[in-house]
Image (cartoon, rainbow, N blue to C red; front, side, top):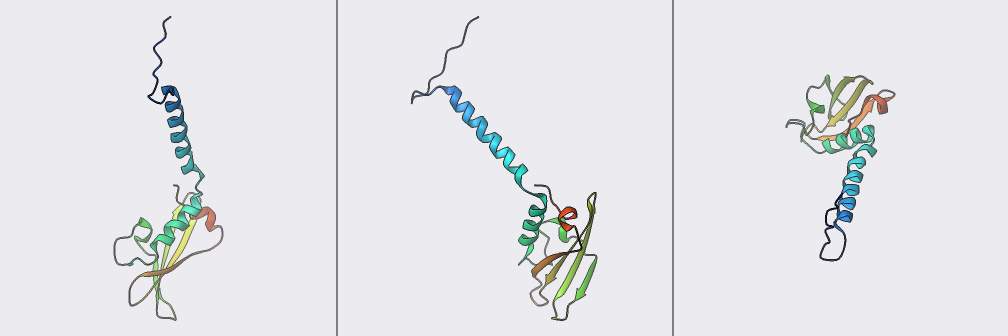
Length: 121
């Protein structure tokens, strides 16, 4: 059985260490996506909707079809959404400034929203 020649880099290191370090780096980056909580991911996405116009295409599909639109006592609009999935029903609400038509706040409605409102990373 013959062995191939070892490749030595210009700084004297063996090429095998470059592969090992590269593999470990890629593996760690791959696993980092698994560490993000789906509920925290949902909240981050909802926070990213604040200060965007409700009339333009949504950054995400969460604003596609509101279940209800109401006028609040302060004059702002309340857009209510309902999303159904295998974990339950996710109800979330955007408050929209009446004059600028921008989302100024959001919240979710109901109990156990940390189970029903989620987005896998």
